[in-house]
Length: 82
Image 1 (cartoon, one colour):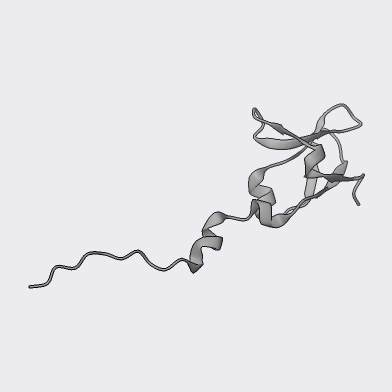
Image 2 (tube, one colour):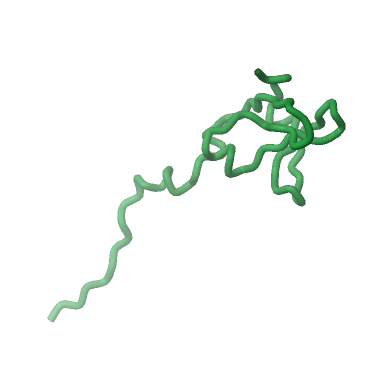
């Protein structure tokens, strides 16, 4: 069960942790990484206590760009004609 629902826009990017963070009532920070978001994870956990929050975000914003580019045609290569 989630302590709260928090929109990703209300979270802060922490360069040191390489994660989105949000203040936890215990004094630490809820954390969720870009990799977790790309995998569809929506639960940010606090490393100091048992609380967690549900992160509300658009999964398409964190989708791997490679999967979107699969529709591109293959690149053409020059062929020598004898």
